[in-house]
Image 1 (cartoon, rainbow, N blue to C red):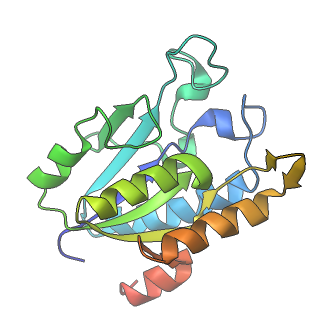
Image 2: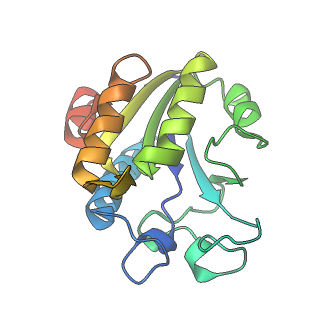
Length: 185
């Protein structure tokens, strides 16, 4: 686990029930993300939270200053844990994430978060392109249904398709329990 950090992407209130952009299985994903977070905290390994705000005109969720833009209490940062604020799906774009990882000498990222089809996907691909080894804990991520050319694509299929694509060359994709067992929980 040397040179490994946990990256929690956008596990924010607006994605949960009563939020402005609810995802499928967000509660289950947050529970798995918390298990990974506990593992990293217990071992004193680096943890970086990523929080998205949407200051663009017309944005409907993650609005600055709203409770929906706050990190969900289940995975809330502790004092001293890094929080990276972003405004784009890719957590590296126009943030200090790469500099933080460089300072910590991180070579391997373990990724959990929301949305599998957008911010998780964009960040994982960017991380791999930047030379990081990436592990995605698939059951600690959540997605939503999509529409394409009049066809409805259910959230579980969206989630599976994006994880399958990431697993083809950008990341190792595992269930949280398998990762924890392999990492020596």
